[in-house]
Length: 132
Image 1 (tube, one colour):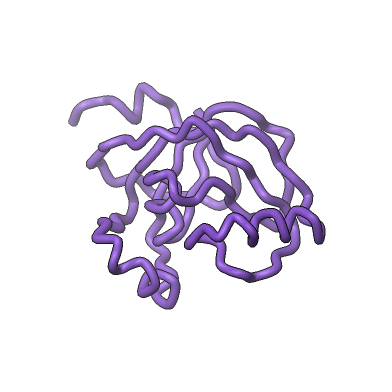
Image 2 (cartoon, rainbow, N blue to C red):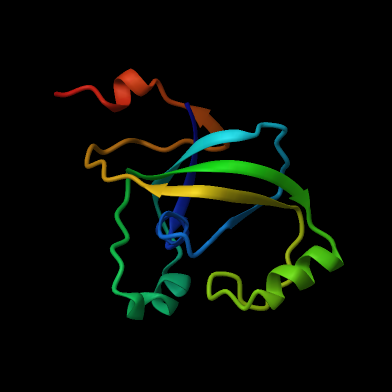
């Protein structure tokens, strides 16, 4: 199954359904299910903004399964649309690159540590759900 590693707080915000777009400098033609993995990286400045939500921000864990619905090239109109959603996860920052649009977000409770990787990577579901 496809996996994407995100820094915290972004991985948790996706898992909680708060963040429905992931912004990347590169596009993908892939559409379908993706696992959201929280890497070891933490954006400490951004994490501070979400401390009042009383969420946990684990690292090295699979947190959610989402469906990648679309990969949209960011332009002025799309930036305005996203900013006008007034979602706490987006703010008013104008972005460049691509917006990966997620839907059907399902949290997963999975305690096994997994190393992340750059880009869109694959994991064997048998490895994911094997018992040590």
